[in-house]
Image 1 (cartoon, protein in one colour):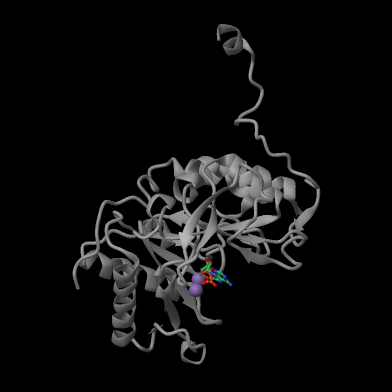
Image 2 (cartoon, rainbow, N blue to C red):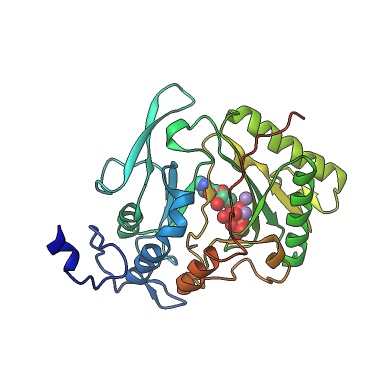
Length: 301
Ligand code: ATP
Ligand code: MN
Ligand code: MN
């Protein structure tokens, strides 16, 4: 033991058991970012990402030839990802069970990147009890042409209304066009109750301010409005996880922000995979202390 302890360690993070092939392949062509750089990003942020992504059924956005070529969502796999990526059997609507993917460490993330994964999306529940959500996500989707100021105003609105119901919520830049408002939950209620809450909450907002919000999927009704996408909150739905890279130009990442700093941010793509060091520093700083954590249950409405 003592001998091992004296060996100087040159690496800054645990060596991965996953070998990244074609590490020089450029997968963000607009930005010249390679598969190896994406793997490094995920290895760097694993410590701040895994508290949100570990032990949760996930869907992957895989773009084996890079983000500009064909990408696809994947939630099942026959085992080609290797032993670092785990499977949990989940009951389907028809009564059969299907194995869903999950990871629990940095090697799991790396194995997914090795398979061409850019994005990690997660269920709102953990593999230990998939029937009881541990978070709600309100996904704010602005109509094209709507400014980010409007999205921020909507997010803050939702936070305020949730607070009126006794619920603490947190803001995350999606890395795309919107903001996600995340409500951590102690997992006691089951999906139907949680979905129903999200549905009624968003419909009430839209009924109250129909010129700003719409709570139905219809594209036509979205004109100039923000779609309050409560459908992320049904069993089997996913939302992009914190610190995940997006398969979009600029290699932006989904980024937790404090409500205070959100006011001064002018784009949901504020940080990118080039910003691992800053993201880690931020995550460990005062502004984001406790982000995404709250012991609370939904009120009876
Ligand atoms: P943006 O801010 O640009 O809307 P987003 O991540 O919120 O980024 P959405 O299109 O609003 O993107 O989708 C919300 C979530 O729904 C995604 O994060 C993803 O988890 C899930 N989702 C979207 N499209 C699909 C799909 N085709 N298959 C599976 N899940 C999807
Ligand atoms: Mn969205
Ligand atoms: Mn959406």
